[in-house]
Amino acid sequence: MPADLAVLVYMSHLQDVLQLRVRYSETDQMGTFYNSRALEWFECGRTELMRRKLSLSYAELEARGVFLPLVEAHLEFQGGARYDDLLAIATTVASSGRARLRFDVQINQHSTGKAVVRGYTVHAFAAAGGKPIRPPAWFLELMDKAANAATP
Amino acid sequence: MPADLAVLVYMSHLQDVLQLRVRYSETDQMGTFYNSRALEWFECGRTELMRRKLSLSYAELEARGVFLPLVEAHLEFQGGARYDDLLAIATTVASSGRARLRFDVQINQHSTGKAVVRGYTVHAFAAAGGKPIRPPAWFLELMDKAANAATP
Amino acid sequence: MPADLAVLVYMSHLQDVLQLRVRYSETDQMGTFYNSRALEWFECGRTELMRRKLSLSYAELEARGVFLPLVEAHLEFQGGARYDDLLAIATTVASSGRARLRFDVQINQHSTGKAVVRGYTVHAFAAAGGKPIRPPAWFLELMDKAANAATP
Amino acid sequence: MPADLAVLVYMSHLQDVLQLRVRYSETDQMGTFYNSRALEWFECGRTELMRRKLSLSYAELEARGVFLPLVEAHLEFQGGARYDDLLAIATTVASSGRARLRFDVQINQHSTGKAVVRGYTVHAFAAAGGKPIRPPAWFLELMDKAANAATP
Image (cartoon, rainbow over the protein chains, first blue to last red):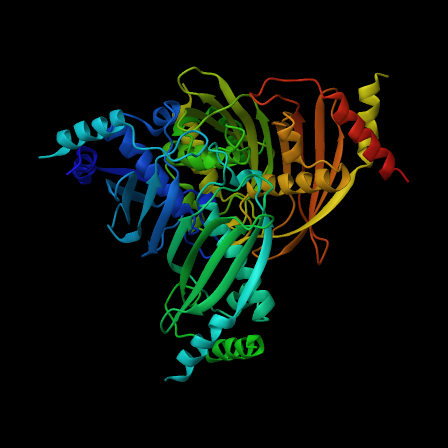
C-alpha cells in the first residue's frame, strides 16, 4: 500500500464537533433554514476540524499555496432548524481515493439530538490558480501525526 | 401503472434554460463562485421552469398551500465562474418515485459552453406547516398538460 | 419625561462584545468580506446582546409576538477582513426616539484592534404581520432592569 | 472648477432601471427579504448601470486594474417584498466629492410602484491590492461621454 494512501485511511479517526447557532439571515419564508446554508455550515465544520485536530488552519494552508476546491457535495435534509437553534456539527475527514479529501458531516439539533442535515463534500488539491496538484508530503505527514494522536 | 406515476414519467420532457449573471456577492476569495451559490442558482432554474412551462409559479403553488421542501441535493463542480460571467442554467423536471419531484440541472458558461456545475435537487410535497402530503390531483393534471404540450 | 423614554435613555449602558470568525462564504473575489455580510454580523451582535444582557433572546421575543424589523441601517467600511480573521463585534443598544430601538456597532480585528466596519441599525416594533405596535410595557421593564444592572 | 469634478457633476444624469425577482434564498422567516440582500440588489443595479450606460462593465474595469471598494452605505427599509416579487431597481450615479463615486438607489415593487428600499453606496477608487488611487483620466472621459449622451 502506498505511503500516502495509508495516511488517508488513518484520517477517518479525525473527528470534531462544532456548535453553531442559526442566524436570522439563514432562514427563509418557509420558517426553516434555506437549503444552501447547509453547505456554509459544512465549511464551518471542516474549518474548525482542521484548526483543532490538524493544528493547521485552512487559512494557513492557503497561505502556503495549497487550496482545497470543492469538487462534489451531497446533502440530505432530515429536519428543520429555526433562527437561534443551537446546532451540533459533527465533521469527520476521510479518504476519497488518492488526491481527494472527503469530509462527512452530520448536523443535529444540540438540545434534542434531532437530525437536521447530513452529507459530505469532496475536495481536490490545487495551487493558487486552481491547477491540480498532488497532496504535499508535509500535509500528509501532518495528517498522519494527527490521526495517530486521535487513535485510541 | 398508476395514473400519477405515468404523469411523472411524462415530466422528463419539461426543460427550461435560464440565463443569469454571477453576482459579486456570489464570488469568494478563491476568485470563483462560492459553492453554496450553486444551490441558489438551482432554485432560480426551477422557479423559471415552473413559471414558463407549468404556467404556475412556485409562489402561486405556495399560495395554494402546497410546498416543495428540499429533501436531497447533489452537486458536481466542473469549472469556475467569475463575477459577471453569463451562465446558462438548463433545468429538467423528472420523476423520483411517487410523491417526489426531481429537478436535474446543468449549468454552463453561456459564451463558451464550458461546464460549471451539474446536479439535482429532490423535493417532497408538504403542507404549510411542513407536514407531508400527497401531490394534489390538480397539480399532477397541470404537469400532465405541460408535458403533453412539450412532447414533440 | 415620559416613563418609557427614560427607560430608553438608560439603555445606552447596555453593551456586549461578540467574537466571530469570517467565513469563506463571506469573502469575495476582492479578497476581503463582501459588504452585505456586515449587516449579518450586526445581526449576530444584537442577537447575543439581547440573550446575554436582556435575558430575553430575540427568538423568545418573536415567540411572544413582538418583532423588530429593520427600518434603517448605516455602514462605514474602515478596513479589510479576510477568511478566518477573528473579529470583535461591539454592540450597544440605545434609544432612537419613541418606539424605535437603535443598535450601534463597531467591528474590529480582534488581534490588532484595527477597525473593520462601524454602523448602526434602527428597528421598529411590530406584530407578527408587520403592523407597527407600541413597545410592550413588559419589554421596557426588562430593558429597565438590564440597564440598572449594567449601571456602575 | 477642476476638470474631473466637473465630470462628476455631469454624472448625475446617468440613470438605469433594472428588473429583478426576489429569490427564495433572499427571504427570511419574517416573510419578507432579509435586510442584507438589499446591498446585493444595489450591486446588481450599479453593475447593469455601468454595462448599459458607461459601455464599460465593472468586470472590465477590474480587469484594467481599477477597483471600486465600498466605503459607506445607507439603507432605508420602506416596505416588504416576498419571494418572486418583481422589483424595479433605479440607480443613479453621482458625485460624492473628489475620488468618490456615489450610487443612489430606489427599489420599488414593479407592479404597484410601492417603495421597498432606498439608499446609497459610496465607493473609493483603488488598485488591485486595495491601495487608493486617483480616478484614471480615461475613466473620467468615459463618464463624461456617457453623461453627454444622456443629457437631453
